[in-house]
Length: 472
Ligand code: SAH
Ligand code: SF4
Ligand code: F3S
Image (cartoon, rainbow, N blue to C red):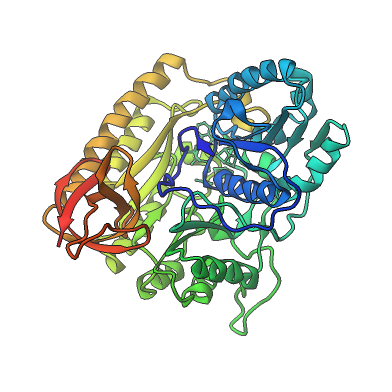
């Protein structure tokens, strides 16, 4: 499997390990390229698991694979265009190798549907994200000679196949699919559909399975994870929803073997004090919060239909820092949203200056088909986008560097994910606050640190987005 550069993600790093799967008839080899966010990656891992259960094995290289699956992203235009250039290459290959099976899954598939087949007639299967768990059924139709498009609204079934995960240490666990928000720039609700929460028991079962396989860290995933449970029935005696993210964290917290729990992505509109208190009280929940703010200006936030003010955002961060003073805060932000004035853009810079983020994913606004803001007349020029993004990125890096400085000389717990691909004498892992950290691979008592080991490291070098240490 390959990723083409994460959109908002914590990159997966550990060496690939195949989960055992019951193999049926030997089929050919497969290759999956993942273009999107963590949810998209989690879908890829489940689809890889299904392929292996069907008898496919992973191809050594994309150009040798008998089945090529692109799990696509359409969050911005450049993500979508990348897919078309990749597809062009495979379509050409198919003309000389008619046995090649070509699959487009994910968010471009959902957005384009049938029209993808017109654009790339060589495709065998176009399938939206809600159909990921049905890959085997859909491929059976392909094997009967059909060209298949699966993009209808679909109730997501519990997946019974074992995902084939990229990491043996850190596992993604979907807890809610879809998004019911209507941010005016965003294509996700139309490609990922309505919110569907999984039942807490199913989530816990998956986490217990991961723990049994030796996983040490889990990240609970949802596009708007604070919405978890609002589509599930049940009211507590105190009159609140029975199923919330806070309750879920408490429900899964004691799974033996899991040392660290993370969750993403948080929405400032729904982030509660109750959740902050639970994170502070539950020892496995890591002190890292990814809470996109998108803009530092209230009028822009209103135009984006985000449903909170900057004051509310500040209060959330203050409360987190009251309870967990060392917490890392990361975010996403968009510049050059339609109509954003220079003064409004400066407020975004001011907020970054003020909060001191550990990491910010930045993007220039990209008009997306079918979203309200794409049709507004007050679009900004490419030149403004480029200039604002450049200045913003420089500030983000400077602030990240300042935040990294606090680690110098400290002893940090690192969860080893695997070898440093650039230096075999080092392993890499993360602090609880999610800073990538490199430490010597050799253990003092002989042998090497292995993925899943917890290492106490004294931090000696600090860089904007990573640290290096020695054994403490
Ligand atoms: N659910 C998350 C974000 C999901 S999309 C949230 O609500 O914050 C990931 C990020 O892509 C967003 O946070 C946003 O910063 C960016 N993004 C989404 N649509 C975009 C667009 N049309 N142009 C530029 N960036 C966009
Ligand atoms: Fe998109 Fe808004 Fe939903 Fe996030 S909350 S996925 S930005 S619509
Ligand atoms: Fe991209 Fe779809 Fe995720 S559009 S960011 S892969 S939800």
